[in-house]
Amino acid sequence: MPLAAIFAVASPLWLLGVMLVLSVFTLLIYRRTAHLPVVERCLALTFPGALTLSLGLLLNGSAANAEFNWSSVRLAPAFSLRYGQTIYPTLQEGPVSGHIYGPMAAAMYLPTTAFDSPSGAIRMAGFLTAAMFFLPMLAFFTLSGGGSRRGWLWAFWGWLIFLLLVLRSDALSYNAFLIHAEAPALGFTAAACLVLWRSQSPDGSRWHLPLAALLAVLAVWSKQTLLPVMVALPLYLVFNRGWTMAFRFCGWLMVALLVTGGLFAAWFGAAELWLNLIAIPGRHPWLRSLTDTSLPWIYEPDYGARLEVLFQAALGLLRRCLKALLILSVIVLGQFFLSTSTGSPKERIREWFRQPWGLCFWVALWLAPTALLGRVKAGGDNNAYGPATCFVCLCACVWLMHLCRNYCAKRPIVGLNRMVWPVLLGMNLASAWFIITTAESIEARESQAMDLAVSYSRQHPGRVYFPWNPLLTLMSERRAYHFAYGVYDRSLAGKPVSAEHFWAGLPAEVDEVLYATGDERMLLAGYLTNFTREVRLPELPGWVILRRDAGRLPGQKDTR
Image (cartoon, rainbow, N blue to C red; front, side, top):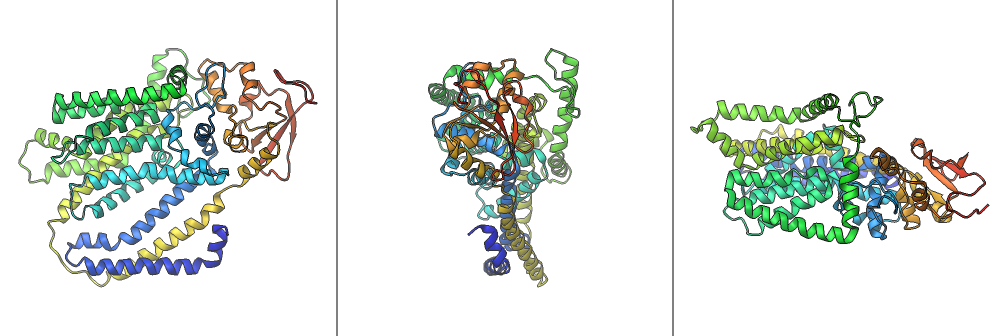
């Protein structure tokens, strides 16, 4: 039975059941936390409701993929890997997928290929994206807590503040919830930072350095803009552990890079990787303005115009980091003027730099240049700000968590006022209502248009082409065809797809080209000149079909 039908019948029962479970857990926590300081006890009592609220927020964020027209496009490379189709074509051969990111960005979504419907695969991919982003962040909060017995409680609340900052940022919401290369890239980077920082502790294992190196390299193989991490982490070791440890880590980085690079080159081809990951993105023009996209792009070395748009991008990055920077400003000022520490300012700064939040801020500084460059390139969007913004927010939240925990550990143990119970019951009721209404809305937000299109494609194998939805024919025929924006992307880079290459990457007997309502049709107008008859079918709501005119297409037999 569909989820919507279940909740439509049983919403009051679900609400009562979730409320009962939350209340039982709250009562058990109340009885077991009488020995805790009052602040920690309040945090523990609100944990069940806060956990339920955070799960509802994660579900709601992940469900946004159902309404995002790029979700199926971003999943197509994973299905291409599953079915043995190339994701890195040459200039003359292969379906142009538009995938200009590392192979790990596709490989991490391979679990979604177990689904045979687009809606199911996209739903799973949304959950997987949130897990790849948030679980390493939660681990960072938990394992950087210094081994406190109640560190998990502070880690959760620090992570929850981080989640709220993510939801308030367009760049981070994109990175954390929408299917793209950034979620695995940032997850790998956060894990690499955590493992590297743990390697400095007295109980650090000899495997910490090679593991951190491997995670950093995998982050770069997910998205190239994370490359500065491979410079930032060794320099962090130089300042904190000396040159010997830094050189040892650089050696492990080289080993990880050579091993993974050799495997990927053997799998995909070294020339193909260079073309799709370096050459084509490197030839993209720059935007002339971030506010007026109608202006012509910058192809020539116009340094004045480039500096102007870089300045606009820098202001955009600053705006997205502003909330976290305000938190950091309050913390730093408080540490300087309210702390009883007798060390000099220089000694305090060096001590902060050794801490996990210092590593986060250091990484954010190194990721800022590539964030700006990613934003000003043609096709760049606000998600490019995400990597630098993520680590500024992580820095602020981890530091705030440590300060609050250390302060509250010194407070006396006092009893709780009875008025806390109405507050807890109200919080539990709100959390239960939120997660149930979120679960009710998930299926309502999903469109069945792509599922119907896959069924239609299975009934007409080798005869339909979806320029903006390569996932659909991968599911129906296990074949990859050209992606419209990928073809356009080649022309942006000055490497247009030839007519012979274009028709070789389409179904052999293509009769119909299907566009979802709202898809851009002009990108392939120069190729699909013989498809002018527009029809709509009642069994395909939300789709426009362009049927082929009578006549022969280049390189094809006339089937009319």
